[in-house]
Image (cartoon, rainbow, N blue to C red; front, side, top):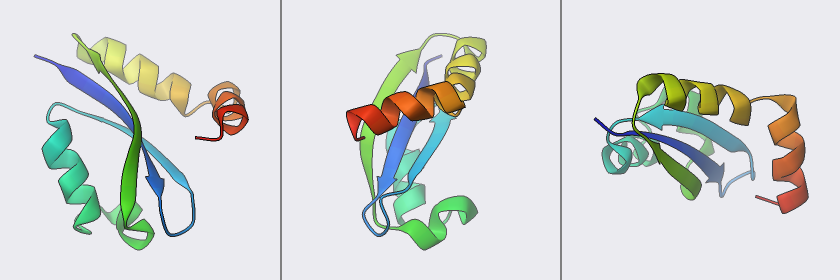
Length: 80
């Protein structure tokens, strides 16, 4: 199975959301249709980054890193 880690950016307020899924197309559609509580007030959202992992463990570790303060500093410098 493939696991995807992704970053979405709100076109409304430029905030970022990081998550993981096994079906990236369906998950992003759920976000943009307002069916995800944590991003409902942020739509529309655009995908600014995603990557694929072969194990859930790797995807969860990567998601955790991308949510860390070290990664947030990097994302700020890249202006994601």
